[in-house]
Each structure stands twice: as structure tokens, then as C-alpha cells.
Image (cartoon, rainbow, N blue to C red; front, top):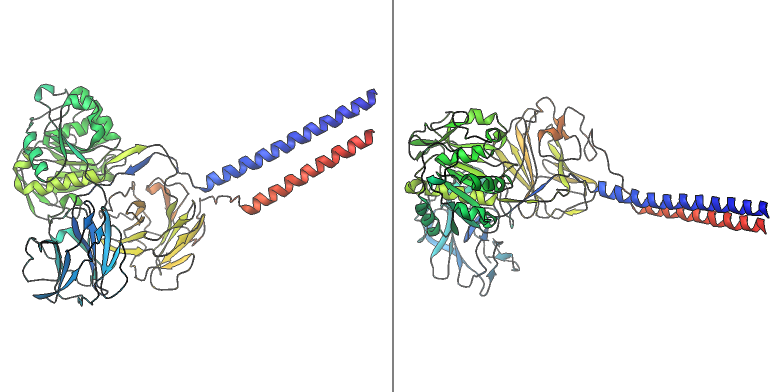
Length: 638
């Protein structure tokens, strides 16, 4: 009996051990599969900064194309019944007659949407309409298109290629939109100044989608600080101007929802509802300064005039190195002249202005030292817009679009709204900073579609990788820059599968599931400076890469830090599957690896259905073996 009991105990022990091993095995399979799936999604970690869209409210012409002829309209206001509205289309500089397209009765143009109007016949739907006739625009001829409302008033128009006829009643126009070889003209921002500077000439467009620099939504609430000199904090130096009413009335006349904020309002959480805070040559009180600082470093945007520069230095925003003091004489001074010149007319803040144009203001106001700022942590995000003179080291107007804070525009003129020629500049600053207003959200995986490799040899090509779930790329775009020359590739019907690559090559060819062709040529060379920007169907920047000292203005929402030098190799590749939006993510000099993982990248293990089936078979076999063992053991004891 003792021997029989010992044997049974040993059998039970073996059973227990085997069952434990089986449990561990099943547990490991489960956990292993989970971890593989998690890693396969390409978690990048880090805080996600989600852009909040901002725009003005109106129906305007957004894009035109010659051959095939089409127009695109955008509605930033409420839903609109287009009954009685029409498009008047002129060609060859002849204003005596026009092709007139009447919108269908009862057609509703939804809020925050785009519609396309194509020439010739077709089936109308909610986003695409057809004129029923050929527009007959010619690429190099002077042409004009006007949008006319149901009272026969022209509400918007565009003219190009040297149009010399009269301007439609109700509209105005300035500048010349005339670029040889261009067949598409698109509005590159949300602001309409009725001028050529609102538009970009190109050889490719974004029919049915937002253009570069555009977004939907409303500006939100703009706050203007009302703070008297009795509230002056210890870090402040300079004169104090608290003339908030002029600016408030000016914004109200432009239809901007504006609130005047006291320091007490700020201490009672008023900033929660504010899109942009305007500091009008004043700063918050000591206690309110701490609140505004935290708000700005977590995405709140600021437009700052003259001595308000003290706050954005003290708060460690522009630049971070100034945190805790006013930064005067280290990063800026009060030695400005009365006038300056525009040095960057392509930035959205300078929409409606041209390079070398004179800007007027007041003397002895705040100006940044551009050479000093360029060497700070703010340098990669800082753009000089107006200088004391071309080539000078003193910035009268500058913009910051940093990853560590909300957007900032610093303007030197303490008189702000009193200088009428600066109204558009101030409004542009409000619009641009409000578009970039961001909110902090918990860490997530970020984008799963990344620019993975760039080849500047012959032919030029790029590679995308998808480290997440399958993605329908319809409506997505890639912006190619060769120096200042921009080309756009638009995805049509294409799905990028999980853990897959697509190679996009210049020129022409047959598209398939991992090869696409731009149908245009690139002129990249080994040492060319350039950039790539991947944009989704809503106009959000998904990924952005710069190389070899590219200095043009990127699309709003683009993030990049550092200097990626790849002048000695045509192959430029991402060296891991982690995206930090910086030059550290990239290397050069290796042999190209089209449609494959690069050096330094670890392919994720796909625990697919085959692996699951195999694990089930193994577990089932183990269970069968255990049951057979138990049965045989007990049979032997009988």
C-alpha cells in the first residue's frame, strides 16, 4: 500500500508539473502573441500634440485648373443653399461675354467642405458638379473666374496670366498671378486678401481636398490682456501700453470673437476657452504670469507687441534659454527704427505683403537678434519675417512654430492697430497662431505611415512604410521639394497594408500594390537640398523630412529639428522605426533597400493565423500526451 501510494503521489506530482508547464506554455503563447501585435503597431511613445483647426468663414474660390478645366470652392461658414448662385468664367482677356454656370436649385453647400466644378457633362453629386459645357481656358491666356451670389454680386474672383479687363463688381484684386508653365493655381492658406499673394502656381493640385496651409474650423475666442502698470511683475522692463480697446474694436469689426481678460480672469481659468492671447505691450501680473506660462507651454498661442517680449522670454518660450529673466540685451533690445522691410513673404503671417515691402511702425521698440536666436533651442522653429533692412541681424516681426509651446508672433510696434497699414499683418498673426493652437493629450502610437527612404540618384524615388494596420491612402498627398520647387503626388485608389512598403518613383510606369509612379520628374542630386511632407486626406501633416540644409517654409503642422546632411550619398534612410521628427532618425551612405527594412530597423514578428494554428496544434498535442500519460499511469496501478 505504501509503495502504491508513493507511485500515485509521484504520478500526481508529474501531472501537476505537466499541467503547470502546459499552463505556462499557453500563457506564454497568449502573452507572446499580444506583445508581437503591440510591437507590430509601431508604438512611438511620447506625447501626442493634436492640432486644432482654425479658419475664417466664407465661400471662396479655392483652386482652378487649365486643361482639364475645373474650379474648386471651399465653404468655411454655415451650410449654404446655392440656389441662384453662379460662376462667371472669362477667357482670353475678353470681358464682353462669359460662360455662366448656374448652381442647381436646392443644392446645399455644407459647412467646412469643398466642392469641385468640372467642365463638360457628368452626374452631379454632393461634392462634384458639372458645367455641361467646355470652358475653353488656355494655359498661357489671360483668364478670370468669378463667384456670384443670388443677388448678382460677385463675392470672390481670381484672375491670372495678365488679365487686363475690369474687376467684377463687389471684388478687388492686387498683384500679378502669372507663372510660366503653371496649369493649376491653388489658395495656400485660409486668409483671403483678394490678391495674387493668396495663391500658388503649380503643375499639380489637390482637387477635392484642402490645400497646403489650409484647415477647417473657426478661429475660436481671441483674448486681449487688460493689465495695468500697477500689476507689473519684477521681470518686466520697458514702456507699458494698455490700449486694448482699439485692438478689441478692430477685431470685432472683422468678425473675430474677442474677449478682454483681466489678471483675475486668468487666475479663474479663463484661458481654457481662449485660442490666442494678445499681449498689447503689457504682461500679466506675477501670479497670472505663471498661469499663462503653463498654458503657453502646453500649446496656447500668443501674439505679442513690443515690451510684451519680456514675458515670452521670462516664460522660456522665445527662447527657452531666457527662462526666468527678460532676456533684454542678450536676445533682443529696444533699438528698432520706425520702418522695416519684409524678408519672407511666403509665410502665412505675411500674406498680402511682398518681399522688400516697407512696413511702418514706431521707433525704439523691441527687436530680436536673429543670429543669437538661431543658436538657441528656438532656432529651428524661428522665422524672421520683417527686418530693419534686408540682410540685417535685427528682426522686427518674427514667428515661432515650436514643438514645445504654442505658436508665437512677436511684433515690434507698440501702437498696433493705430497703424492702418499693419491691420492685415495683425489679422494674419491672429489667424496663423489660432490655426496652430494645440492641446495636450496622453501618449499614443502616433502615425503608423512613415517616410522610410529617399533615393536621389537616377531615377529618384522614395519609400513609405506602414507599421500599423492597413491604411486606405485615397486623398493622401506627398509634397516633394527640390530647393524651392514644389511638386505634389496625390494618391488615388491605393491601400498600404500592415507592415508593408510602397516605392514611389519619378516618371511614368504601371502602378501595382507596392510600386507607384509620380508622372512627373524630379531633379534631385546627391547634394540637393530638399524636403518631403506626407499629408492625409484631411490635410494633416503625417510625416516630414528635411535634408541638406533645406531652408524653405514647410507646410503648417510640419515638425523637424536638427540638420540632416547627406551630401555624399544618394541613399537617405530612416535608421529605426521610431519617429522623433528629427535628423537623429535618419542616416545616409548605405546601399538602397527598396521595399525592405533599412539598416538599424528590426522587422516586427507577425503572429498571424499560421502562428496561431501552429500553437493550437502544439497545445492540443501536449494535452493529448498528458491525457494518455494519465490514463496509462492509472491503468498500471490497477
